[in-house]
Image: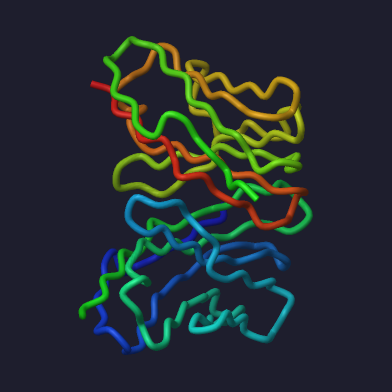
Length: 115
Length: 113
């Protein structure tokens, strides 16, 4: 069965610093998507970044980038120049390609930004 | 463009009562998903609609849960009768077609006492 593991329940980072959130996953599939979703306090979950497994190049979105290691089944999120608005719960997630669309989520990492 | 909306935002009910949650997807999105996060656990998939048809309901926990999407627009998720373990946050998401990014609503926080 596919699983997603986030080993860091909480993390803190100083404003303007860089932080990396860890995620590992387990699957026997070769083609799949990986995601990082962000849920700020009392607000809805939004997609931060998406990676297709067949693409070797790591996805980036402004200050957010991933380190996708397919062989190691690792998918970490790096946030550069952390801002107060980055404080949120971050979920790593997985879904298959070409089959059902359900997303498998990790338990989440709560990120605190220290001013 | 309006996002996914859910109603109510919070619901507190007693064990044995019935609760109906509503989700309005983004206009034009044929795919609608329900997920649930029980306290301290992962967000888990419940079911997937394509228009008004249930594509996958493998995540529905038991027959106390009934989801509908009449007319292929908004969806309702009814829990009857509610049990203590049903407490959690119920999320709805929608996408234009399968495999595309799913856009999530703010969730409904359900507390069963």
